[in-house]
Structures are given as C-alpha cells and as structure tokens.
Length: 146
Image 1 (cartoon, helix red, strand yellow):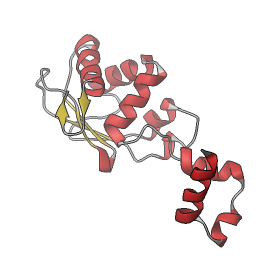
Image 2 (cartoon, one colour):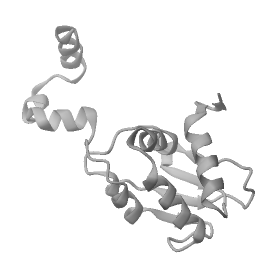
Image 3 (spheres, one colour):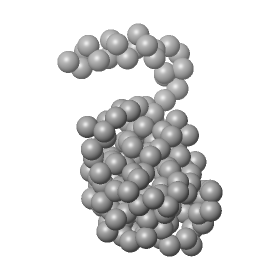
Image 4 (cartoon, rainbow, N blue to C red):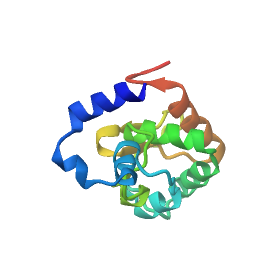
C-alpha cells in the first residue's frame, strides 16, 4: 500500500522542491499540527455584529466548546472551517470569526467554512447553546441536516 501511495504522492508533488523538506515538515504539510490548542483559538478569535469576547453568549460558547472531548472538537472544526486538521502554525494563527446571528434560540449555528466564520445565535443559557451546537456539528453533513 505504501508503494502505491508513494508513487501517487511523487507523481503529484514530486520534484526538486520536495527534497528541501525533512520528513517531519512533510508530515506537518500533509497532516497538519497534532496540537489542538483551543485556548489559542479563543485568544485569536475576531468578533463581529455585536459580539465581543465579554458578551455572555460568547463566554458560554467557549465554556461549552472547551468542555467537549477531542472528537467533538474536531467535528466543530469541520463544521466551522471545513477541516478537522490544525494549520501548521496552530489554531492561534487561524483567522476565526464569530458573528452574532440573531436572537432566535431555535436557530442552529451555521458557518461559512471557506472563511472560518461561525454564525452564532444569541443563546441565553449553556444548556440551549450546548444542545444547538451539538446538533449542528453532529447531525449535519454538506448542505443539509441528516
């Protein structure tokens, strides 16, 4: 199996530039960073449309997100960025935006994955936020709810 992978990889990515990298550097390029630092993501996040880092909904959001296990955090990354991989320089260097998306607590969070942009309704309690966030990240696939 590796022989087939190697042949395909060299056919697509081969050439003299490939020889400039060490194996560890290639692994980072292909797999991303193995370190999931959601504290760094929180520190680097930009807020929009009435949200600030001190807004009650944002505080609840980070409490809920930090409480999730790694598989659910990876699903959150897929939901909000389109990938479950951490960029080479880490989550702190990801340009991540959270915008207020109305006050209807029945509305699910949504995302513009191409722009790493989470649209978050103004939830009032951690129970509702957790329920809606988990529904959004676990029960959706592509452009529809499963």
